[in-house]
Length: 242
Image (cartoon, rainbow, N blue to C red; front, side):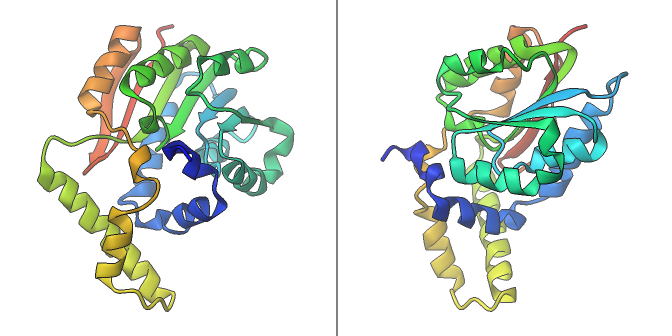
């Protein structure tokens, strides 16, 4: 089994979703994403949630733009099942696509839906090799309408080991607190061991946020910046020129 295929396993998916509350300032990251999207002069009419997981970003977009039409795409069927269930009240406005955007052919699947006023992605593209990341950003650019935003909530690399250690401690401490509140009996040390040897860890291919912002500028995005960062988590974005 390849490292990225672990996300097709229901147990891995359910474990990730159950501990998402341990992600530091997760709601604030989504709020930053929405603040960026709301700078548009026109209401958002269409969006793509790439690597959508259980649809949390798509839900945030629909909460602000309830008439928007969206495509939610992921290669993990267990994740897509969660997204379909959580967004069932918007079913008539949404299309759920199952594919691996590591293959450039995914863009052809979007021909019936684009251009998009926004493309959003959360903790997904970092699983791609760096060369492929940059290609994906260019492919997203080609799918955006003029003035459309790409917003990426992402796990990025850090230059300082202390930053990595602080993130790990924050996350494990939060998970420990969640488990204790739910009556769990595992020790902090056991959770640390599980985190450091988790099956999806090898699927992470992290890149500096500064480098990724440079890629966006080279592709042609404007207003490119890192709009939020805590530890190894960042919200960075760029807009296609009008």
